[in-house]
Image (cartoon, rainbow, N blue to C red):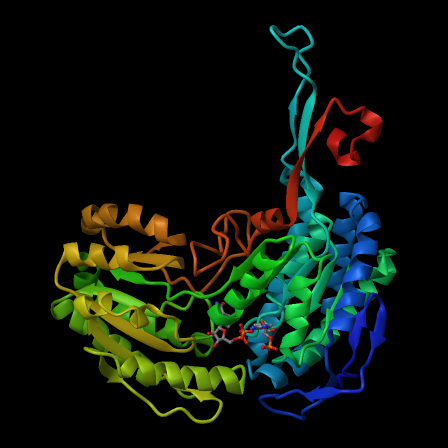
Length: 505
Ligand code: NAP
């Protein structure tokens, strides 16, 4: 099955074009023309979303669960075509896109189960105490309610699972919030076919058409207009620190500021403790190389920094990583821009004081080859540039003189999505010193694993202190992510006839 995009926006059930277009930049295959997004289209989509909210927010949890499952079914029905256009646009291999499709439909179904159970409503009831002295207590009920239309920015590196029908969209729709997606220019055709699947589910489930719109980009105006639109009540975003921060600031400057849930970037440090390094330096170095190079390093959880304590084990670890990375061939990156940013980031890293190149390569136009650098802990702590994310397969070994310096390095990190301890039983004392620090720095702390796989489940946290995310209380993966699009309302002395249906059940 071949899919040729028509290049239009989906505004509340209607495919709409504009005169001006932009061309997609596929990794391979033909480029297609896409209608340029405009603030007017954003306005139409936001108004339709607000109108749909009054109906959609009062649908039953069972109806919304059925809708989410129907979206998953419609995505599966288009599976082959989605993989075909997705591979062309992003350069990601077929197997990766098939796997990501499974993750996307899996998380839609997970949210369906989650809202059926109803725990997410966090219902609390303090019954009236009319005879209490000195004052009676009124009847008080609390529950979580949907907030209104939500803006979602598709991510470049997960064209399915973090994009049009990805985790942010699934969480918002599950909560009872209509969604306006700003399509990512790196995969507009993939966005279009997934939007087609969502529209089919809207029709088959009888949902209001304004519950979902996709506005393609092609210009920064679209994203800016979207986060500033007065009817938009929250934003879900995955992307760069610079882009995310600019949009976050726009949200804060609005007459009515709104929450911006941005997942922005992380170097995901790994702490290689001495006994683990003594026992298996080669295995750990090889493992790190595999994790770093996977998917051309284009994962927000890519472990870009390994902190070691100086010695023969640390050298063996770095050598095993170098050897592993040197066997990795060139990999196509998601966009020309990301490839250019990677080459620039690698050059910047190599030029910093005290940084030694263990593996340096030339990058072709849209291809990445791994880089490996080494620096002393002192030089690393003196230079903030060395703690910045370089998106791609680039690793930095930070060498501490002793345990105390390793703890100082841990204290120097900014907020992270993940932090990892590689340890053996005999490392427990040092691990115990590091744990309270890592807990303050990261949303997820791992022992003896690599952070690149992010399980979609109840207990996952994919977030962390800034700049990992703009909101440390939130996660963008897992069922807890629904809380971003809900707010608690307290009903005092409310007659049953006026309470939301969910309050009673
Ligand atoms: P990006 O440049 O931040 O773009 C993400 C989305 O936000 C795009 O739709 C983009 O629209 C929009 N946007 C960005 N800045 C904007 C602004 N000032 N005003 C309005 N809209 C704006 O991220 P990306 O394209 O996905 O990747 C580029 C870089 O982001 C990578 O090199 C990497 O460093 C980082 N990244 C990080 C993660 C992560 O998980 N932390 C994931 C992917 C990428 P336009 O396309 O129109 O600019």
